[in-house]
Image (cartoon, rainbow, N blue to C red; front, top):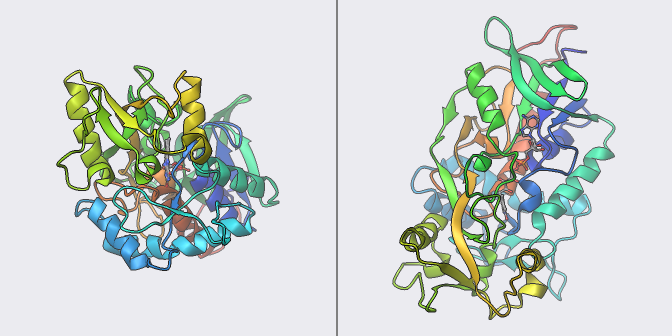
Length: 398
Ligand SMILES: Cc1cc2nc3c(=O)[nH]c(=O)nc-3n(C[C@H](O)[C@H](O)[C@H](O)COP(=O)(O)OP(=O)(O)OC[C@H]3O[C@@H](n4cnc5c(N)ncnc54)[C@H](O)[C@@H]3O)c2cc1C
């Protein structure tokens, strides 16, 4: 056991990207489930927002992010993350991710709610998250500086001054102490706490709880985003998702009589998520059913993940509208971090959905979270790399 190790907790996009960006520094990657399992990352359907189109610019992407955030986003962070988008897409391409492309070979760009331009980069139609996870997990498995340990983090170790000095975890072989000079929490969100959710069951805010118990400051914890169109085929979650990109491509929200649910509402089907979710919840709260009518789209070809989820429930979206309801989807709040991903506790960083960077404000713009995690992974790795070399045998603050 060495106190100069770096521990990254979580193996979704945030944890994997951070561990890879830290290479060749040795990293112990702790994950509750084996690599590739039980992550929200693998379920991401829509894609990655990046200002790549000829009519687009990072400043426009940042402006859309701020507008969706309802006045509570940090403009500096929005500029940094939007500016990083095109380079991060190139990074994934360099790692071997085959994004969807048009006939001319250029990246195909999708449209999602509250984006003023087509800027959603996708893979496999609606299987982007699975492709991102596969690509990063493969790169991590091949990276000699990353060691994977399967176990559930149960506490942060601290010294008398409150500085984080390591991680305590539970493994098949019992409790394990991992002394560390830097711990990065990348444990994902908390949607799994809700009865109706799009999140994996393991997304229960574990990292948030660890940080709070250690005394880290949390931010915007009350801001939970509800996705408007979880597929309402069960009464409780996890519920499969009908991606927003379906509405981007023309699917409409209707009631049982075929009337438009979004009639008279600014932005209609492409209004920000909270607006669409509230419009649907007003109907479902009265006991009415709401459907996503995607019959005008070739769902089987363009959205194979959604088609398979529907088929699994005995529904053919080419013939029948898809029953939908809002469900807990994304936690904007989290561990308060600065522009380098540092928490308020020495030696503790947070990345991905568990962190609150200020990007999302009160409402995340669609497809900004995979992007945010990868953008902050770079910044966290640079910050940790910049720490003084630790004295032998002693955990040191940054
Ligand atoms: C259905 C769905 C669709 C989405 N679509 C999109 C999209 O199109 N575009 C987009 O940008 N975002 C999308 N999102 C949001 C995005 O997927 C998540 O915000 C992002 O993937 C979170 O990544 P993460 O690495 O922070 O967490 P996760 O991917 O959830 O990974 C968390 C990791 O932490 C581990 N872990 C948790 N607790 C512990 C513990 N105590 N000890 C050890 N390990 C632990 C887990 O095992 C896992 O490895 C979607 C989310 C969902 C649920």
